[in-house]
Length: 454
Image (cartoon, rainbow, N blue to C red; front, side, top):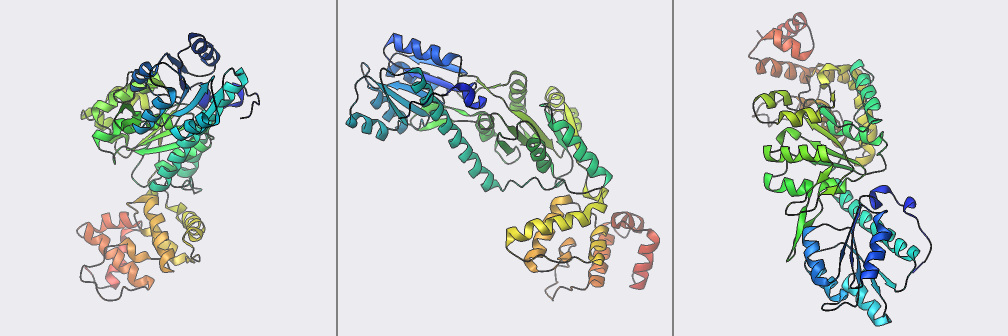
């Protein structure tokens, strides 16, 4: 093992100052030495004089790393480690011993130790081992987050496209707010790009090198969301022992989407976390310090939810330090050509298909649509169109249920069907239909007259 010196300053603060370490050794002098060495470098150090004492500590607390003596009265360090691994405790372990041979080293590695140091050792050696152990723990968390991100298809930060006044204002607000560490509440209809805005806030912030951890509060059951957010204490017998997303997001940004769906009991817990910057895993006595920026989002008016008693007023005000509203696409339709060009350019290489050409008439048709699904609906339309090889405008209206015949592809027929579908949706109210279509009532009346529709 290398004995190269390493200082805590060379390791990211999220690894050292928020890390928790357990020292298990029957020698009081060694416990005291290691505790004093690490106390100024890590967030928390606990010590235990035996395997039995360590059992109680790991059931009550979460540790990033354990420094474990091999030879102790009662159970040996290796026997204790085997038991921990069998019961689901996966924290990093550095074994130390004054009596070592090759067989002991091999046994230690097979039991699940990541490092093995022979006593007496220098301070640089133990700090080096701690550094590598915390580095492995961080890498394991990053790998887990990567798998979670891939499985949830977290989008790239490419949705804040456009040059309209509405989008320029949004871009300016994000640029200004990203420089500070305040909690941000993103509001707006579904599909307006709230997760993209959260990701942009993260990537432009001083936390850009840290993780971006999204969680949709609406997709998790009330039984799971508390452990998902705050973690669960390890209880033995292979149960529990998981870090929460607050811990995985250390040094970065936690994005709480659909925060309005969070159950009331958990709202009070989240409020305490925002105020104290500490989380308590389910079933644990330990409070883990967290260094996380919170960005929350909702499509519901939270003020109305507060009045209805479905959302805590104090949490609402705590989240609303900075509020950014994302406009619906129907309010900035002038950005549609730029968005279409952007989605074609980014999605075609991802899908492995050639780009499609979108004509001026087709863009004008897209500008007449009301886009209830907002930018997400436009993106999905372009993705389907790329797969089909042409702009699939027929997807923007409801076809009659009997339409087993070939779907028309000429723009005039599609426009007629779209206008008639909008008219039908508002029970023939031409004024309302014209507003939804983005045209004048006179133009609408002229069109339907040409088609012989009253």
